[in-house]
Length: 86
Image (cartoon, rainbow, N blue to C red):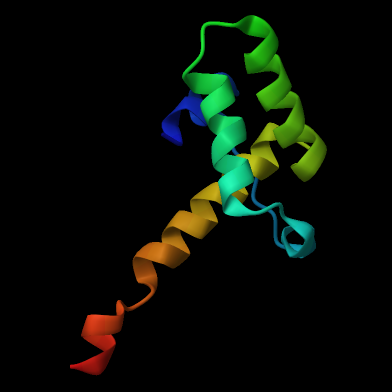
C-alpha cells in the first residue's frame, strides 16, 4: 500500500536526522485513510484531499513517506508476543 506514495513523489529521497515532527503524528488509522484516499479512488477531489491531509500533517509527502516507512520498519523489528515469551 505504501508504494503508491513513492510513485506520487519524485525519486529523490530526503534523510531527516531530527525526527521531532513524529511526536505529533496523527493516528495510524487516519494515515491509512489518507493513503487509501490517494490510492483506491477514482475521484480526483478525494485523491487531492488525502494528499493534502498528509502534507498538512507532515509538512511534505517526503516526510509522510519517511514516517510511514519508519513505522513499518519498527513494526517488523518488534518482537511478537509469542517470540518474546520463548
